[in-house]
Image (tube, rainbow, N blue to C red; front, side, top):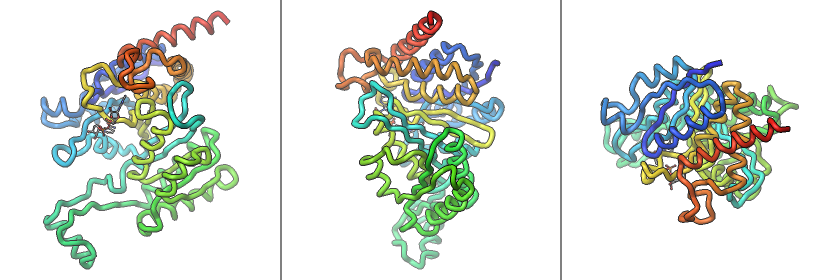
Length: 365
Ligand code: NAD
């Protein structure tokens, strides 16, 4: 079956990574017809918007997309295209499996955690006002002057609807993927209304899975320490947007860094696959950064498209390249300036070669 997939190269190191991803996915034999759509800084300079309507149209039509990272200038400039895309398409789930691969250097082994991050609410809602604006002043007045007059204000919305659908997703994922436990994580002791609601709703939903999936709660500060000290105690974590973002990077660190941490965003009918990492702009055009996180995101995409064999062959090949540790990028070597490190493109080629070799071996069996 031919699958039509929207491919967004992104900016910074995105285009070079995504070219490698495309070559690797094509080599799996899965029949993908790519529809390339530009978003980010580079297209902004040409058409005046970092997220042209055609990108959204293409994803709505094809229902599946894979994207490279996109830069968000800090403080000024446009709002995050990544956040806008998730909101526009109501991609309310951000799924980030963090799994240890043999050969990938890390202080930890045998990590097997899944982060389920809410993608549309919380402090990411983009509802904020600068100091001295009428809106900020209004909120300050509403707070009965508990907020200082010279404050900027960001709003943190957490809804019953938003929480309910993300927690349900976490439990259903746990059930389908033979996981044992879902841990909800917030700071409900301090944010009693918003994070309190998240726990309240999660508890209600957990009742439907009693006897099948265990449910527990943790506070975010304690969770950070626990994940560093005893990550083996945890399985599937479900979190509001901001905590989910931070914990994703922490868990990426447990399995060897951002270079190997994939992800996926889901709505009810749409899916956009992307790595956790950003556009690493300082390495733009240098053929240097690790394509693995995006290739592993493509593996998740192949699974989603029910290209099970292609996904497995790709996973086996990635494991082989990691295990050998030869044709890998600088971040996977013992020292960053290791002269034996290969480039983005060459690592992709090594994965394609491993796929071919492994298929020859299995044909001989
Ligand atoms: P980053 O993830 O781009 O880089 C953080 C560090 O990790 C850097 O030292 C970088 O060199 C390293 N790194 C990142 N990806 C790597 C890879 N594939 N291989 C090897 N090393 C890698 O984070 P940042 O510097 O905070 O962000 C840069 C830009 O990307 C910002 O504008 C940010 O907003 C954006 N961003 C985009 C996304 C996305 O598109 N989903 C996600 C996160 C950040």
